[in-house]
Length: 190
Length: 196
Image (tube, chains in turn green, blue):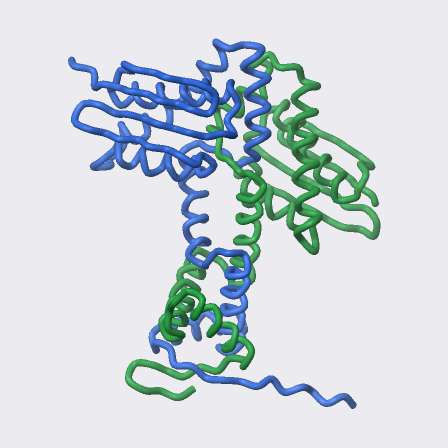
């Protein structure tokens, strides 16, 4: 690395520089400005706890979420909608969550190389009522485990229906389903 | 034995302070500066392919954090609409109350907080959280507030429920709803500050 007036030279592969030139040109920026911005943002992302690879994953998940029609809803309203108080038929609600999961899974299947991992990351990034999302793969079985100290019994069942819908679209069948208030244990096979 | 292909490298000049910080991070992650900078550029180029930039990452992260703190949950818009339809059809009154109360709770955070401009903070967060609504105007002028929302994807029930949410929030800010025009996907509200 050589040094000159508060700047240093850094080496990167030729093809990356070429791509960076194209991108900066497309944005109407000089390569120098573009590089400074990239480095500055990379440092900010790092301060948020992301390595570049994790940041790329998070970006992709968030972009997918927007493309899928992601929307925020007040958590209390969701609790109400999931509860018996709203008087909606349980079967109807489950069907809605299952169908929504199917649609989600279909999108992930088309978009991601590993849709199961993408789905796990989606749950981790967006369902902050979940304390833990675990996905383990043993040969032909995928084990899903979600733990939450906030979910009600009904909300747990609805989320399980959503996960089943997504996994069915990805190409798996339910082998086992255990739900308990705040805990979902699901096994899927190809 | 197969000969290892040599990657051609180029150099570029970058701010020394940035590179020093990156060098430190690279070391913490058992990477060379070269390896780390490569990862950073790979991320940037991937982001560019997705039509976003890294600042989107920071914005998204901040948005999720703020939504979480403000009691919002992220999910699929269509599912929310369908659930709202079911609930509204079964019990209009209770559903409206649930959304109204959520609006009260949301606004209360700003009203009781230490923000200098609570209404402006509320307005900014609301705009950020309802990214799915293509048109939202919320104007505060002297003692009045006018709201205009256009969202073709809203169902009829969701339009009424979202209106109830806004009413709850505006009332918490001390406004009284004086004018209301609601039709599927369109909300117009005029509110005037309560004179006590």
